[in-house]
Length: 268
Image 1 (cartoon, rainbow, N blue to C red):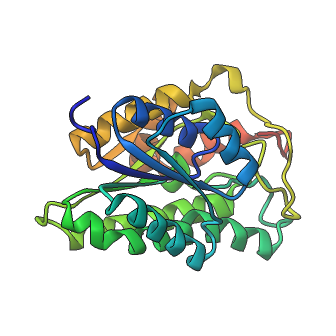
Image 2 (cartoon, rainbow, N blue to C red; image 1 turned 180 degrees about the vertical axis):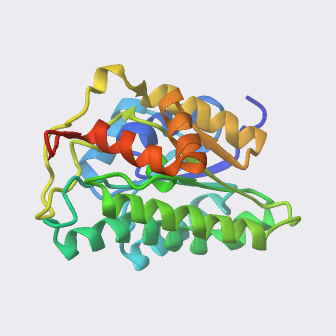
């Protein structure tokens, strides 16, 4: 518990899923936690549920630079600094490239990639002063392009590359940069995923019951932050996918296609 006691931990997208689990667990570990989300109602529910004096919430859309900067400014005004930033806010999509609108792709990129850039650049001076940690919650889709998730994969590839560049620039400085890649995790991200028209699909095409829980995923992420791991890839399926794509890419093409398609139709 001592490792995170009184640390200022900033988590984007903390009202649902992995983000919410991270908020709850960091508070238990003695951290001061600030989180943001686009929906104030969900943040109010979070405050009512956790009832913790060291929780700060802020309504912000991470796709908007000014709102990201306002969020970080509010955290610093309340607690003086930032020790750990976890860029967790994200959105998925499910639509074929031949059908999806460009605006849908742009929306996914604005949240998943640019949201990370905006928050990180606003918080980085404070994190560097404290030799703290920047985390990006990426995805297996950041290592392997997934059918029906072209914009999501693109945003996560971009996220991984940007954070790797930042990590290399800060090499030897004491400031740590890492990205974590959950496999399929039970959360709201697939229900909120955008369809070809940019609307929420409203239901998950996957079997959520067999997936890693958000709470377990959050525990792995926190442990990786404490150990300052370079990257974290979760679940057997996730690790196998990254391995196969690296060493047997043509075979991975076939297996991934078989997983997502049935009789020529995208089913997952």
